[in-house]
Length: 158
Image (tube, rainbow, N blue to C red; front, side, top):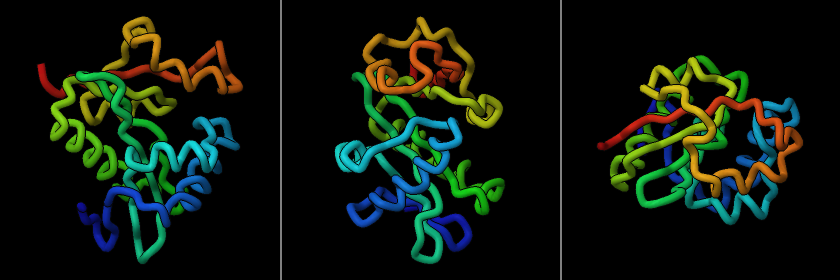
């Protein structure tokens, strides 16, 4: 658990599911990320970390393990009135630390905010460099097969 001011970053709990869905789906409604159903959040709950401030969830993000050497950072969302205050940065740092502790060698993102992820050492890559199984979630996306997200990769360990 990491603190940022009077906010903490911690692994998610069952009680966080509705707030995670509300935050993610608000941005999904604007076409900025994929929506998540309650079922999807419950199934992926162990992947999620949340930013909690004054007892309320103000942000979330997930680290999904894809394979022995590959993970994805996904569903990064910070409520609008808390953006640009360092919470997203601390959340991504926490997820990267988790990947490192799990001995994951590479972490990727699919994003509309490449400049944000470049600050952490992510580099743009070709979609062809990602394994086909990562595209399973894409089938339900309204933008499929014309994905306009930018794939990026960070090497944690060689």
